[in-house]
Length: 390
Image 1 (tube, rainbow, N blue to C red):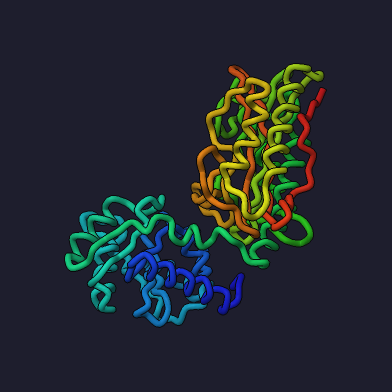
Image 2: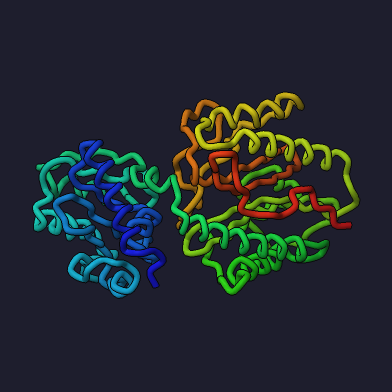
């Protein structure tokens, strides 16, 4: 069940130890489930409970700290030796003021890691204030520092195996998007379209089934198409309304997102015009992508088209993607936005997204891609034009 070789996992851990040394971090606590997966292979719906990897040059290999109920999954999925997988007892589950991190504190002491600087993922979604309080009160001889997405940045450049997984995720998102377009019709329930999307994403194609995506399919419809991040309801799709579809395929936790727009009715010149301008901005931004340029320079090209048409857009026009767990498929590193000085690297992977919200309606289109020395390679081959269904 392991998705990468022991050598590739070990290489990732060694890179992490090197960056830790450069930043003066003696021990790193990795809480983000995407980072745990990246460094160990552990993949279970267990991240709603405390769990982490403990990484230190003083250890032979990382320690996987998980709930007792989940230890079997760690044995199966990771390359770690059994003694490096340390569960906390079930009696610590949801019984405040007791907490699993009290057990983690004792493990850190037992491994003689309770001195020096401990890096923690302060902004990870599943690192709570209680977790931090238990660490700081229990390890009084340590100094704590924010590791500031240390592992996320190591994930930024993908291996060829990772790129292959994203190509398969692309085939799955194409299947899901086609299912959405086929299903969205006047009088059809929004939830039926969502069900069709999930079927396409998870059945997959070419014999490769998909994983659950990190974000639920989004279907802002009608006036809702002028808003962001709305999901489906049991209401019916209506004539003369647009629906924005934003979904992602996922394969072995690697994501490939895509956004498209459907309009139920006769061709509308205003909406068609805005979509064409949206696509022009997206394509102009994409044309500026290659290894060695900054995220800012790509964003400037994108916004130059919007400025030409006097279209206002405040949100970013892209971000890095790869491994994803709920609640996000973004890597939380580079943003394609004005002022971001990050230099794009070959085999970094991006989701470029163009959203135009026009008051009481909107359109959206996006592209996932791999950065190359010469430019970019799109993961998907799927029409971007506004789909009219009369």
